[in-house]
Each structure stands twice: as structure tokens, then as C-alpha cells.
Image (cartoon, rainbow, N blue to C red; front, top):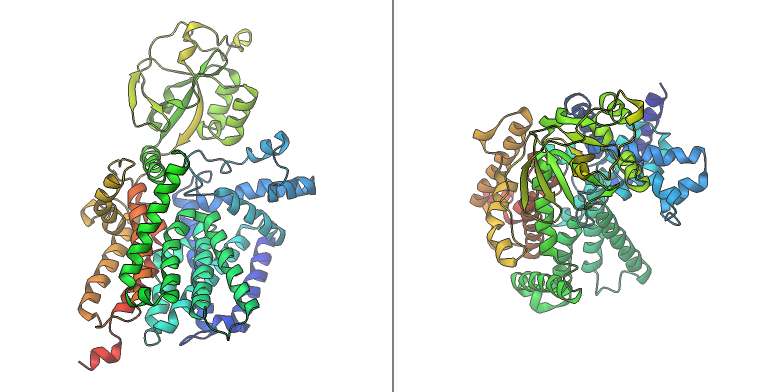
Length: 564
């Protein structure tokens, strides 16, 4: 009952804000149109909740739940210690083992498959923990808040481009607010909502700044505020998904040069080419300056390799030897289908396996306890079980078969054998569960790349094929892949159709190049490292509106078509 009351209150509150605020009105559209877009997002937010509650039922790995659930753990500390809550929230003074233990009770705080370049879960977990001061932990309120956040970001993007598309406002509104995947993925407790806010703030206020960079009409305080809001947008993008910021930055640098230098304004293609070459050069120079520690190409190759492995799923086992991990970077990998071939060697392991499951044994709280206190829960692989020896950061894989062991026995019925002597010669056959990853149902094969520019450029065509065209119609195997395919066909149809209505000369070439460069870099990166169809569609949702804006900028308006 309280959930309904809280949701109703915030629904009415944000509806009133949208209806009364002059911000939510623009050329061709009034407040009611934006309110309709907000309600549409809420409908899709409910649909997203239904999908991950009744179809994909694993709450631990579901992004729309896992950040919220971790935030509940953080917020729960407020009931016992306000100091603990604010320490966890700000990160100030959190190096103590007391706080590190709290972090590691969260399942998504420390994800070994994320990196700062691609993801940062800390920010969205902390944001949800702050929101709980308003929501009192009601999930529906968080959905409403994230829908409003993304609506604000999308509105900023609309207002940034509408001055250049005055005769196509309806199409622009549809391109930004009404495309299904854009609505869906920006309407849940996901990073995409934050990405849209970051993109909107950065682009809108950047346009405001550079359009008046030499104007005396705009006061210095107002310019200062615009710069602050741009930096806030950058900060949100960096904390949500840093690679989005890395793809946007060269576009904004090129736009700034166009406003500052007359030569670049007359030759925008040269300007963008120069800026991209300079950007790539800066990345290469950084790699050399830091003695190979910061290598963007190596990071992309490593991320692709990690994603390829994780998309296949599996159970990662760490070897126990002499009471400690033999090698923190080497794991035995067995398939999820072979999970019944893990034999627990203690009563605790048997109880947890049968009552909680392998996913619980691989959760952060258990793994952190095993790691820090050296209280590992041992398992033995059945004889004849196929496994792979995986080394983190390396492509080489050694395939092997579990062998006989002198300590191959079940001790769950014997109290006297509850303690295992891990110093025996055969202790190399004992493992503890490190990570459990479900098999991705819609995975693709991505050919591995080498950390070189030659390899990167050679793989761009295949990357664009993956991010824009797959799944092919003859590869459909579920309702979701059919939806992904239908969206791709629609986008491709619109692109082909637009080619018949290109205006000459093309106006606002700099904006065309901005949308093209950002879309190209994003689609290439997505296609290089994402081997899961669902992930591709989700990551593309922050690109598709810019592809449509590009097409609107280069095509004729209705009156021009009729006049021919």
C-alpha cells in the first residue's frame, strides 16, 4: 500500500513540474506533449520490470535490480550508523577494513568484468542510495525518478538541435522521444538514463557557449555557469559510461575549433579529420609516456576478450594449494551444464550448494570472506570432467580433464573430517567457486583483434556489421531477437530512403559531422567488444537518435520536396 502511495505522490509531483515548467515546451510542442512522453517512458519502465521479473528471472545479474539492491544494503547502514552511511556514500575515509567489508557485501560493487573505461557501478549505486532518502526504498519511485532524469536529458538534446531543424520539429521529436529501444533502455534503473542526462547537458550548454563565444551579450557569470554545467555533464558521462564521453569529446573539440577559426569553419571535413588524428595521436602519446600502462588499443582488445569469454558463460574455479590461491590470475573453467560435477568437501559447502546455489557461492560476500579470511569452501571436480585453464589477460587456453585424487571422498557425513589438510600433494585438485556466469542466449562470435591500429581498422567493417545489421532475419530464435531485427531493418530503411532526398548544398555540415563522428565511433566500439545482441541493442540506444538527427540535417524538408 505504501508503495502505491509513494509512487502516486511522485507521479503527481513530476507531472505538475512538467505541466507548469516553461522548460518542457519547445518549438512545435507544449508541456502536454512532454508529459505524454514521460507517461510513455513510465509504461516502458513497467514493461522492463515485467521482462526482468517474469522472463529473465535472475535478479542478481539483472542490471535493473542489482544496483538498486546494492543501494539498499548501503542505505540500510543509515538505520544503525549515519557515519557509516555517509562514509560509504562519499567514499571519504572508506579505506578501513570495516567499510571495505561493507562494500563487498554488495554483489555489483566490485565486478571483475568491468573497467573504468567502460563501466563504473559505484556512481549509480550511490545515486540510488541517495534517492532512497526520498523513496524510502520503494522500487517504483526509483523508476519514476530515472524516467524523469532521462526525460530531462532527452529534452536537452531536442532543444540543442531544434534551432537547426525548424521545419522538421515533429520528426525530430519522434527521433528523440519515440524510438522503442531508446524509450525502453532509458526508462529503468540503468546507466542509460544517466548517459542521456550527461549527453543533454554537455551538448546543449556547449552549443549555447560556442554560439556566443565571441558575443558580448552573454555575461561572464552566465558563461561561467554554462561551463560548469558542461563539466557536470562530462562528469555524469564519465561516471556512468566513460566510453561515451571519449566518443563525444573529439566532436566537441572540432565544433569549438570551427567557431574559433575561420579556416575550419570553411572546411569542416578537414577540421574533423585533423581533430580525430590529433585525438588518436594523443592516445598513442599517452601510451608511450606512461610506458605502456595506459594503452587504449590494449584495453579494447582485453575488453573484447573478456566479453567473448563471459558471453559463453561458465563457472570459474580458483585452485586451492597450501591454504592459499596458487595463482590469482589462473582459473579452471567448466560449463554451467557441468555444475553437478562439483562435489562439496565440507558440510557448509554441501548446505550452501543445495540451499543457496552456485550463484550464491560465487557472490561477492562469500568470495570476499574466502579471500580475506582464507576460509575457503572447497570443492572437487568429478573424475573425467572437462575443464579449461584460463589465464586473465591472455588468449591462451589449456584444455584438460579432471583426474583421480587420493583425497577424492565425501566428508559431509563425518564430523571428524570437516577440516581438510590442504598441504597434501593432491591439493591441486581442490577448488573454490570464484565466479558464476550464465550463458548468454543471444551471443555472437566476434573475431579477436590485436592491440594495433592495423588490426583495429581492419575490423571496423565487421564491427559496423555487428552493431547495425545483426541479427540477420534468418538467425532469429526468440521474440526479442525478432524485435532487434525489426528495429535494424527500420533504421536501414530510413537511411536508404533518406538518400533519395538529400538536399544540396548540405547546410550545417559541422553538425552533420558531429552526429556522424559520434555515431561512427560508438557503433564501431560497440561492434568490436559486445558479443551479445541484447547488449548491442541497449548500448545503441544512446546512438540511434543522433543517426536520425544526421538524416534530418541532410534531407530536404516537406516544402522543398513538393516544390520539385
